[in-house]
Length: 191
Image (cartoon, rainbow, N blue to C red; front, side, top):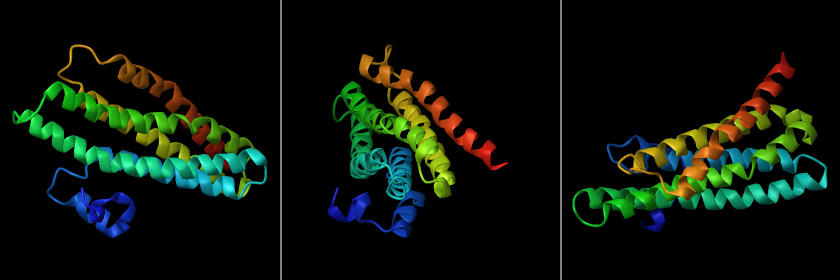
């Protein structure tokens, strides 16, 4: 992938045009990574406007995650190309699919690291930005569920999902329940 194709270096209009084009990449995996990066950006913003020391640590962690997630979005396109080659007989299908599933698994792992941060911001963050906290919760929820689907599609021909991937999938319902609780509690507080 050339530097011109890197998600970090594209403007939003270019990214959306590439996403809408009649090409396989970028696709849903990149979208999930970008949505998670947007959630991290909101987390960082809310934390930067909050006054406690924990919020400052949250902002630093969220900023670091943004770069990782954008890189994962780029890696997703490369992994998809490897899977397509393997299905055409150029490469090991099982290996390509497992490697491709590892990328959304990593997106989920990163999202999981921010659930507790959102719980902190929901209770102690800047109250003027509470809806941004709720929106970040919903975006993480979407990114994790989307990434779970991408793991499952890559593993659909396997008899058993490898343990590390199964473990990540098993973590999704509890985390998304916590994220939905954050958003619904905030929503109730606005009524």
